[in-house]
Image (cartoon, rainbow, N blue to C red):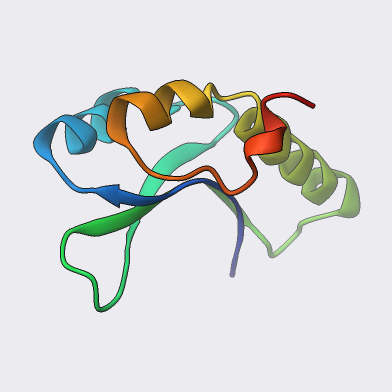
Length: 101
C-alpha cells in the first residue's frame, strides 16, 4: 500500500495552459520524491487547488522515514515561493502568515 503526504500551496486557481505547463515541467520534479499536483474542485468549472505531495511505499515504512517525508513536505511547502506562484497564477494561500513568520 501507499502513504500519501500532502500540503496545500494555493486554493482556487483558474486552469490555463500556462499553469498546466508549469506544473508538468517545473513543479518540484525530483525534489525528495515531491511533486506539485492540481486537484480539480468539484462542482466548479475550471477551478483547481495546488498541492505539494509525495507518495511513499507503506509496506515497510518506519517512523523515521514517515517523519522525514512529512517534515520535508511541510518545509518545502512553506518555503516554496507560494507568494510568487500566487502572483503568477492567482489563487489564495492557505495561510498567508507563512510568508512573514
